[in-house]
Amino acid sequence: MFIRLQGNTTEMDVTCQALYTGYAMPTTHLNQPEPSQQDDLFVDFANTLELSRGEPVEQLPDADSLLDWLRGAGLLSSRARASEASRLHRDAGEANRRLQRFHRLRDILRSAATDLAERGDVGTARIRELNHILRHGLHYHQLHHEPGGARFAVSQVGDRLDQARAAIAGSFAHFLAGGGADRLRICANQGCRYLFIDRSPAGRRRWCDMRTCGNQAKVARHRARARGLAGSPAPAGG
Image (cartoon, rainbow, N blue to C red):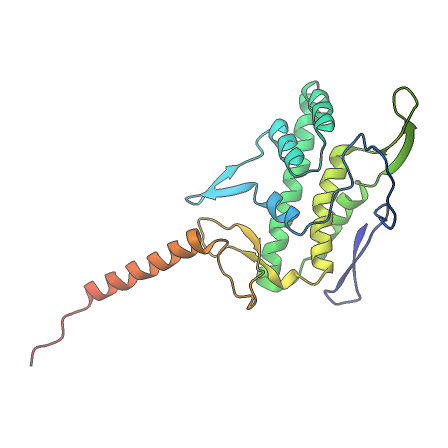
């Protein structure tokens, strides 16, 4: 899987390998299943760095919280999550390196969203980084007997965390290739800045949630108008 720029335009193609699903096999998957390429996966991940009253709040401060998020997103099975946790607990340096790689992907996604909002394009340097992540997520399938030899099972062979990181990057790549780039938004509330996909018919949403950020903006405008009226000089008497 990789992103390719078409000539000098901003059109992008995504080429996938190891994602063919034209047939079904009754197998048992011991590792995580092939992740779906749902649009919101990269959005959900990008929003793991939140703002509260304008201050950043980190939802993924350590390797355990990262593994929990990946498990909740369907990118790791319970068994894979336990295996990765055991491995990373034995090597604090590796745990920190893995965490930083995911944080870097999140930075890339948020920067790309800013590029799209401001310029309507994603820079080639960010595409190069995304392609690097996609390449490191390659894997293959392996057939083997289950214990006892009575049944077969198919499992993925490859680095689980690199695969999970590539799945997140891949959801963004497929989103861009699907022509949805002009619907990616950053919440207009400066104290929020959530990423969201504008699926409204008119495509004019400015806030991630009208009930919260949108309502706050309306209240702020109302108060500003009220202050303006209160500070206006009274009309001269006749």
